[in-house]
Amino acid sequence: MTQWRSLAERMVREQIMARGVRSEAVLEAMRTVPRHFFVDEALRDSAWIDSPLPIGEDQTISQPYMVARMTELLGPARGETVLEIGTGSGYQAAVLCALGAKVTSLERIAFLAYRARERLDGLGFDVRVVWSDGSPESRPDGPFDGVIVTAAAPELEEWWSDVLAPGGRLVVPLSVMSGGQRLLLRRKAAGGEYEDTWHDYCRFVPLLKGRKGNGSGG
Ligand code: SAH
Image (cartoon, rainbow, N blue to C red):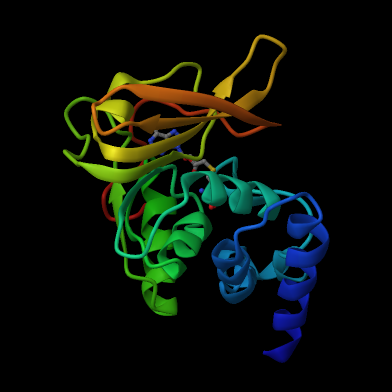
């Protein structure tokens, strides 16, 4: 128990603070969420390393630094609503939940959605996990104070911006010409206009269309 705390502390210091994440709330959330429970038992010893890790179905749990950086850009305040697209392991959702956000998270692969839901419930993170690919028929209405896309998007989907509340933020890894992606932070001003800024280069698994599996988690 105490051992993972010191691994978490070290991860925060060496991987996250060292690369310039400053938000104390984000750093504290990264210290308190038990990342080792979001990977398979066989990978538990590797959970805190400076890398994404496989979670099955050809998907990955994101690198700790990337989770921290995207969370800092999103900047959720306690009680704000956040939509995540790409639940994966549920780790990013747990970090947002630890910051006091009300999180809804979409996952297109039934098995991952099911497993993330069980895991988050078991650890006491109150996250709504929905088996969905965010297609026109299934997208949530919003509004949301934050939208975070955790898979590589070839382009911006219009509805991500539409569901933002005034003052809301969208964070998404958008494909760039050089290959890979770059983090885009979009803020919606009170009057509805957008302010876009570009941040870290990164490499995520692709955002895909269509749901996979069946609703019972198979
Ligand atoms: N946030 C995750 C890591 C995400 S990996 C974590 O903390 O572990 C990206 C995830 O996005 C994968 O699980 C993938 O299945 C999912 N995904 C890809 N396209 C999607 C879509 N259109 N809608 C919902 N989820 C999607």
